[in-house]
Length: 132
Image (cartoon, rainbow, N blue to C red; front, side):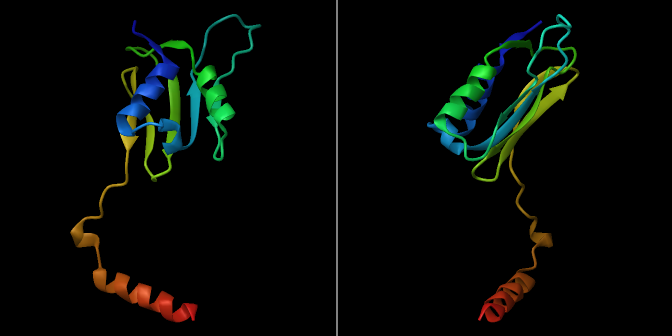
């Protein structure tokens, strides 16, 4: 069993990708907590959203809700989610055999064999001509 604090894990992951202030690099996020086999009468919040255009208060509330421990070790996956960044990159939950982590993603460069500079140039010229 590997107990991990969801809030601290998230902040550590974002800090590893961006310089402070880290929240200025976030566009939005959604994190879902997996099944919790607790008391049936207990209401457990399972989805935590940080919407675009969030305020400092929204950011602090989001972090406060993520301040819980979960088992990030092998077994069933307990956290799911996606974080979108202002530069067009994103992070999503990775999982293998129940072991979990945040995985930073960016769009790969287009291979040279797929780039048609001549068609891109023609398209730009057509756009310029048609705008007039």
